[in-house]
Length: 207
Image 1 (cartoon, rainbow, N blue to C red):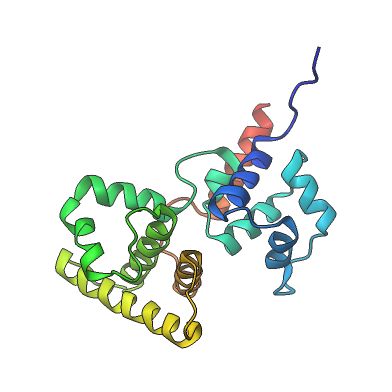
Image 2 (cartoon, rainbow, N blue to C red):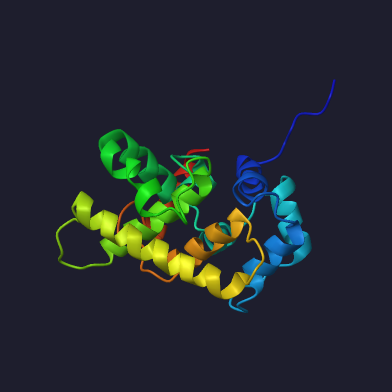
């Protein structure tokens, strides 16, 4: 009888993040990004183990979420979408088709109808910009279009500065967007880190 697959579901989601969302990022690069700030330490061997079956400490999952912009609830429990932006993209398409339909026209540098990952990163930037305006009313569709134009111009300017006469891969646009989103305060929605810890404790006590 073949041995059962004992890999933790969290390990499978870590690999889904690395291989699909991060387009096959090498494990060594994944480890480097987690630790390059010097504020978090984990060995390369430990990271490999966490991706191949061994359960990681919660602070490792939290660091992965901070660095790569994924939801802690998705990584730990498989709940919902991988990133806040992917959920936002689904809601935007369902609730306001006119808004997303305008993006190929108002943000041609960024918006690629065939690239859902870059779409998600773009919408996350827009969401964070909107939510970072304390006490303000939600933006109208027209105001969102204007914000999308500004963001598209910003990314286009960065590309013009760095690319010279060379063609930049689409993945570079995604990296710029993720970097911008990281610098903007995260919207105050969804469960907090403490809420997730409570769920882990309840799950462990019930097992």
